[in-house]
Image (tube, rainbow, N blue to C red; front, side, top):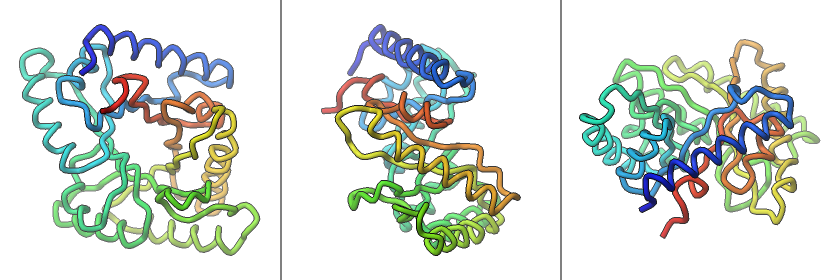
Length: 250
């Protein structure tokens, strides 16, 4: 597990790099939120990050996140009882896990089908809550990536229209709030090689906003440890960073 000093130094350096990327892009650092991806790391690592000022955390799996949230809360009870943490579900969410996910996360980044959205909405209705979500979009075309299949949407009006229709149906679900889009870029040798993927997601968001003006698509969740600066250059509002903060996973 990384030491307190290492986490603090890593967070400082990541935030510094984010601010520099914003400056180069002519953006305010306040426009980009760091989600520290704590998956596989113990609750103590989250507590160390909290002590360094971090408040937004990302997890991949509902079960791991649920256990970690409870343990973190217990550890913070004496040291930082008023810390207002926001937990994000950034990993793939299976339909059968929808009932366990609602109400636990500040934002679910990985809604990738109308079916999953419907299950989330039904569960939220039972709990009488509203769940903010992002729609995961596979704009790179990689078979290994989850998300609505949208590679080449720019030149395929039928593909875009079909997706926009699904988004409209999801947006009409009364217990969900669509807040934006999410994507994952392929692994590349140089971060700038990922920029076309991020630019495609930004353009998709803009096209959706124009077609569905009633939506408030404020967020673009894109960019991780190896490419977050390129994502910021293309408009990311949420960057999901784990390794650069907590170190390599075993």
